Length: 246
Image 1: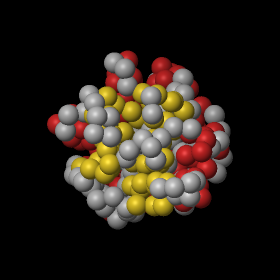
Image 2 (image 1 turned 60 degrees about the vertical axis):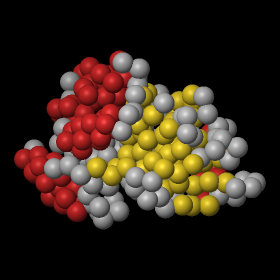
Image 3 (image 1 turned 90 degrees about the vertical axis):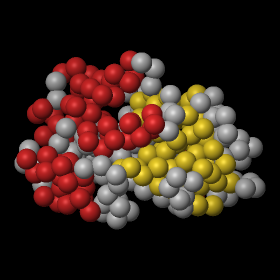
Image 4 (image 1 turned 30 degrees about the vertical axis):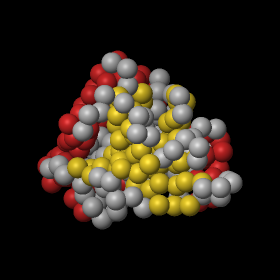
């Protein structure tokens, strides 16, 4: 089975649709959304509606810090991020906000742990941005394969022997074996706001039969997504990030 792993969509419906189309073309039959469905972008309602339909059909979705900020705490967010949160609060319907409220923080299934930030205290939304942080995440996961977002870049951490983890920078489109006798922490990248100087949308596919992960990059009309951000009056800096991938 091919499982598509999509995170940090950030209200970018153009990027989301492109990644979903790409994943289905590659044979994905299961979908997991790793949080931050909203924030930054211009179409939070459109993104929620798409993902809610997938969840109704059996997909998994977990909560991100931007999702939680819609109805709860928005601590640690800068002015740019808060402007998008306040915009989303104005345009989202009550049922869409309720969908965000009902998202679980973490889901474990078979050999996989799905979480937005780190499996170690996921409610704190700490970043898996070092081998040490990856070790804590993998230890708390208690499963061979942990899939996260939050960092907006694609990385793969693994433990060859013992708890110590090593970071690997994957090549898009190249399958990486991730055998279950080792521990793996995969950061799948951001669909809606990549930050590695590449505006192409990012996601990953986990192949449960081959036990491999493929990191994917998908071109989409990021200029149209940026134009929508400007159209609804969100800060120019958000539009620039979508156009430039920073």
